[in-house]
Length: 274
Image 1 (cartoon, one colour):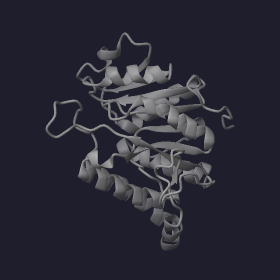
Image 2 (tube, rainbow, N blue to C red; image 1 turned 60 degrees about the vertical axis):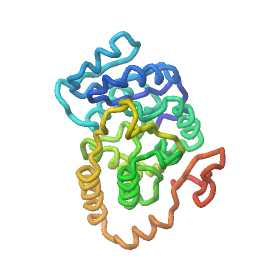
Image 3 (tube, one colour; image 1 turned 60 degrees about the horizontal axis):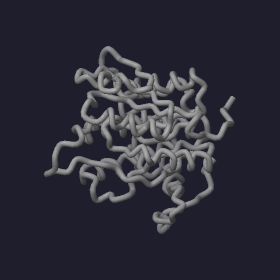
Image 4 (spheres, one colour; image 1 turned 90 degrees about the vertical axis):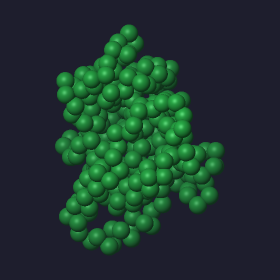
């Protein structure tokens, strides 16, 4: 039975997967706590003292003795949140790339689009994003949209809101970054859920500045190959490849942006695809 409660800061959890995030994890968690009192950190076998950095903070820490990957971390975070009866899960990366101050905007969008995963899409100040990452993201958007049956703005972002029904999906295949792609596809195909993007600004390491962020765990060539091959196999298995492609390309991304900044060329408010 789907959870019919409207999500707010009191009845959702923030899940933060963390692998060797000692550099930024305390700030990430402190900022998350300012927006939501329910924070779950999954320490994925870190060997740099990540968990020690937040040991005195009022959060739940789930520790993997060895690295199991982002997919396993998210599954464990979802499982803990569901066991505690939360209406949904907000996710953030542990490296400080995402601003916790954007979380209320994701919840606002979730209330307007109750049958959608909400994605914090890195659309603002995109020039600050490394070129190779931007190209990789756009390629990923193209392939994952084909799997979902509708286009999505920024399928690679780790800042999201997942309704409880999505968190409860069983047997979502794929590990590491493949899991985040597959859960979009599984929610679309199995639940009939859509995806709505909320424009955010991401923070990146300046090439000539002091070290503020660790090197990304995302490896564009390796991870995009894994994501793309995983998605293409599903598309081919369903058949009607060209018809499905044309239908997908005819469904523009759903962007929730009351400011109107991204209304030109992409619908700012569009009917949910479900």
